[in-house]
Length: 186
Image 1 (spheres, rainbow, N blue to C red):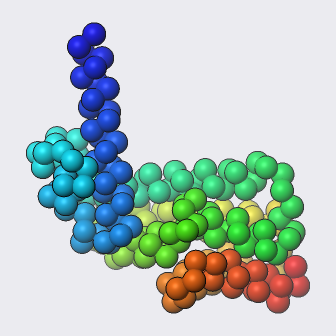
Image 2 (image 1 turned 90 degrees about the vertical axis):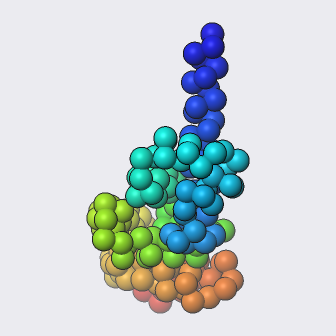
C-alpha cells in the first residue's frame, strides 16, 4: 500500500513540476524556466526538478511535448466533430486553436514560446522544426477539408503568427485568418 501511495505522490509531484514549468514558459519565456523558479511555483524542493527531469532541456522539451499534445487534440476535435469548415470564421477559429495548442486565449504566449524555442541549438530546437512541419500539415488538411485551394498552409500560419505577436486583442488572429479566407473567396 505504501508503494502505491508513494507512486501517487511521485506522479502528483511530476505533474506539478510540469504544470509550473509550462506556466513559466508561457508567462516568462524560456529564460523563466529555471530549476529554482519551477520548484518555487510547483512547491517542491529544487532537487526534485533534477530527479524527475535530468536536465533543463529535458524539462523544456517535455513542456513542448505537452503543448504539441494539446495541438494534436485540438486538431482531432476539429476534424472529428464533423463541423462545417467551409464557414470562414469557424475555419479561422479552428486553425488558431490548432496553432495555439488548444490554448486560444494564450495564443500569443504559445506562439512566442515556439518561436523562442526554434532558436535553441539543442534537442528542443530540433523538435520545433519537426513540430512546425506537422503543424503545416495539420493546417493544410484543415484547408483541404474546407475546400480552400487558393491558400497554402504556410501563408495561413504566417497570418496567425504575425497577428498573434503584433496585435494585443485575443481575437485578432481569428479575425485576420477569417479576413484572409474571405479574400480568397471561401
